[in-house]
Amino acid sequence: MSGTLASSAPERTRAIGRAIGAAAEPGSMICLVGPLGAGKTELAKGVAEGLGVRTVVNSPTFVLMNEHDGRLRLFHVDAYRLDDPEEALAAGLFDERQAAGVSVVEWADRLDGWLPADRLEISLAPIPDGGDDRTLRWRARGSAHARLAAALPE
Image 1 (spheres, rainbow, N blue to C red):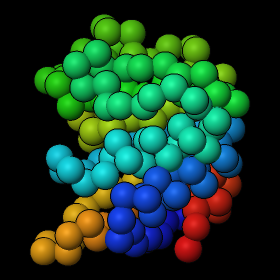
Image 2 (cartoon, rainbow, N blue to C red; image 1 turned 90 degrees about the vertical axis):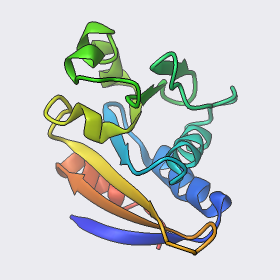
Image 3 (cartoon, one colour; image 1 turned 90 degrees about the horizontal axis):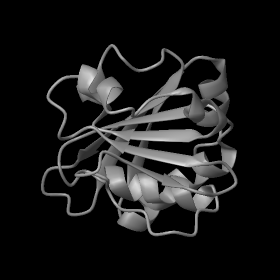
Image 4 (tube, rainbow, N blue to C red; image 1 turned 135 degrees about the horizontal axis):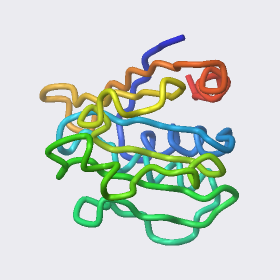
Protein backbone atom coordinates (compact mmCIF):
# COMPACT_ATOMS: atom_id res chain seq x y z
CA MET A 1 0.00 0.00 0.00
CA SER A 2 1.49 3.33 -1.04
CA GLY A 3 0.51 6.83 -2.01
CA THR A 4 1.48 10.47 -2.37
CA LEU A 5 0.51 13.54 -0.38
CA ALA A 6 1.22 17.20 -0.97
CA SER A 7 2.17 19.80 1.60
CA SER A 8 2.35 23.51 0.89
CA ALA A 9 3.32 24.65 4.38
CA PRO A 10 5.02 23.38 7.55
CA GLU A 11 1.60 23.34 9.27
CA ARG A 12 0.24 20.94 6.63
CA THR A 13 3.27 18.68 7.16
CA ARG A 14 2.58 18.78 10.91
CA ALA A 15 -1.11 17.98 10.30
CA ILE A 16 -0.10 14.88 8.36
CA GLY A 17 2.11 13.91 11.31
CA ARG A 18 -0.73 14.58 13.78
CA ALA A 19 -2.96 12.15 11.87
CA ILE A 20 -0.23 9.51 12.09
CA GLY A 21 0.32 10.11 15.81
CA ALA A 22 -3.40 9.98 16.57
CA ALA A 23 -3.71 6.61 14.80
CA ALA A 24 -0.42 5.13 16.02
CA GLU A 25 -0.44 1.90 17.98
CA PRO A 26 2.23 0.33 20.18
CA GLY A 27 5.14 -0.73 18.01
CA SER A 28 4.47 1.76 15.20
CA MET A 29 7.65 2.57 13.25
CA ILE A 30 7.64 5.68 11.06
CA CYS A 31 10.72 5.96 8.85
CA LEU A 32 11.44 9.38 7.33
CA VAL A 33 13.76 10.01 4.40
CA GLY A 34 14.63 13.24 2.61
CA PRO A 35 17.30 15.90 2.22
CA LEU A 36 18.11 18.57 4.78
CA GLY A 37 15.18 20.94 5.13
CA ALA A 38 12.64 18.54 3.60
CA GLY A 39 10.34 18.65 6.65
CA LYS A 40 11.26 15.44 8.50
CA THR A 41 11.38 17.15 11.88
CA GLU A 42 8.10 19.03 11.21
CA LEU A 43 6.44 15.68 10.47
CA ALA A 44 7.95 14.22 13.66
CA LYS A 45 6.61 17.19 15.65
CA GLY A 46 3.16 16.48 14.24
CA VAL A 47 3.39 12.81 15.25
CA ALA A 48 4.29 13.99 18.75
CA GLU A 49 1.28 16.32 18.83
CA GLY A 50 -0.97 13.47 17.69
CA LEU A 51 0.38 11.38 20.56
CA GLY A 52 -0.33 14.16 23.05
CA VAL A 53 3.34 14.91 23.75
CA ARG A 54 3.62 18.19 25.66
CA THR A 55 7.41 18.58 25.70
CA VAL A 56 9.43 20.39 23.03
CA VAL A 57 10.30 18.11 20.12
CA ASN A 58 13.49 18.99 18.26
CA SER A 59 15.68 16.95 15.98
CA PRO A 60 17.97 14.77 18.13
CA THR A 61 20.88 15.07 15.67
CA PHE A 62 23.60 15.26 18.30
CA VAL A 63 22.08 12.97 20.95
CA LEU A 64 20.71 10.49 18.36
CA MET A 65 17.45 9.81 20.26
CA ASN A 66 15.01 11.71 22.43
CA GLU A 67 12.14 10.12 24.34
CA HIS A 68 8.86 11.90 25.03
CA ASP A 69 5.84 10.91 27.12
CA GLY A 70 2.42 10.97 25.50
CA ARG A 71 -0.50 8.61 24.96
CA LEU A 72 2.28 6.26 23.85
CA ARG A 73 5.96 6.91 24.47
CA LEU A 74 7.66 8.56 21.48
CA PHE A 75 11.17 7.47 20.52
CA HIS A 76 12.49 10.15 18.14
CA VAL A 77 15.67 8.96 16.40
CA ASP A 78 17.94 10.94 14.07
CA ALA A 79 20.42 8.77 12.14
CA TYR A 80 22.06 11.67 10.27
CA ARG A 81 25.36 11.45 12.13
CA LEU A 82 25.68 7.67 11.92
CA ASP A 83 28.33 6.37 9.54
CA ASP A 84 27.24 2.74 9.79
CA PRO A 85 23.88 1.14 10.72
CA GLU A 86 25.60 -0.96 13.37
CA GLU A 87 26.30 2.25 15.29
CA ALA A 88 22.55 2.51 15.97
CA LEU A 89 22.57 -0.86 17.70
CA ALA A 90 25.79 -0.09 19.58
CA ALA A 91 24.26 3.18 20.79
CA GLY A 92 21.17 1.36 22.07
CA LEU A 93 18.79 3.19 19.75
CA PHE A 94 16.64 0.13 19.18
CA ASP A 95 15.54 -2.22 21.93
CA GLU A 96 12.45 -3.90 23.36
CA ARG A 97 11.09 -0.62 24.80
CA GLN A 98 9.97 0.52 21.35
CA ALA A 99 7.46 -2.33 21.15
CA ALA A 100 5.26 -0.42 23.61
CA GLY A 101 5.76 2.99 22.01
CA VAL A 102 6.06 4.77 18.67
CA SER A 103 9.36 5.26 16.87
CA VAL A 104 10.02 8.05 14.39
CA VAL A 105 13.35 7.68 12.60
CA GLU A 106 14.74 10.60 10.62
CA TRP A 107 17.32 9.69 7.96
CA ALA A 108 16.02 6.12 8.06
CA ASP A 109 17.81 5.33 4.80
CA ARG A 110 21.07 5.34 6.80
CA LEU A 111 19.77 2.32 8.73
CA ASP A 112 18.87 0.28 5.67
CA GLY A 113 18.75 -3.41 6.51
CA TRP A 114 18.44 -2.82 10.26
CA LEU A 115 14.88 -1.54 10.46
CA PRO A 116 11.92 -3.87 11.01
CA ALA A 117 10.13 -5.08 7.90
CA ASP A 118 6.77 -3.82 9.25
CA ARG A 119 6.91 -0.01 9.06
CA LEU A 120 5.55 3.15 7.46
CA GLU A 121 8.09 4.79 5.17
CA ILE A 122 7.67 8.43 4.17
CA SER A 123 9.95 10.15 1.69
CA LEU A 124 9.77 13.95 1.77
CA ALA A 125 10.97 15.96 -1.21
CA PRO A 126 10.90 19.72 -1.62
CA ILE A 127 9.52 20.84 -4.97
CA PRO A 128 12.23 22.84 -6.77
CA ASP A 129 11.45 26.55 -6.65
CA GLY A 130 8.23 25.65 -4.82
CA GLY A 131 8.92 27.50 -1.57
CA ASP A 132 7.37 25.41 1.21
CA ASP A 133 5.77 22.92 -1.23
CA ARG A 134 6.66 19.29 -0.53
CA THR A 135 5.75 15.92 -1.94
CA LEU A 136 5.40 13.13 0.61
CA ARG A 137 5.51 9.63 -0.82
CA TRP A 138 4.53 6.93 1.63
CA ARG A 139 4.63 3.17 1.66
CA ALA A 140 3.09 0.96 4.33
CA ARG A 141 4.85 -2.33 4.91
CA GLY A 142 2.80 -4.82 6.91
CA SER A 143 -0.83 -4.86 8.02
CA ALA A 144 -0.34 -2.76 11.18
CA HIS A 145 1.22 0.03 9.17
CA ALA A 146 -1.39 -0.27 6.41
CA ARG A 147 -3.96 0.62 9.10
CA LEU A 148 -1.76 3.55 10.14
CA ALA A 149 -1.48 4.74 6.52
CA ALA A 150 -5.27 4.59 6.20
CA ALA A 151 -5.41 7.47 8.70
CA LEU A 152 -3.37 9.77 6.45
CA PRO A 153 -5.32 12.85 5.33
CA GLU A 154 -5.96 13.26 1.61
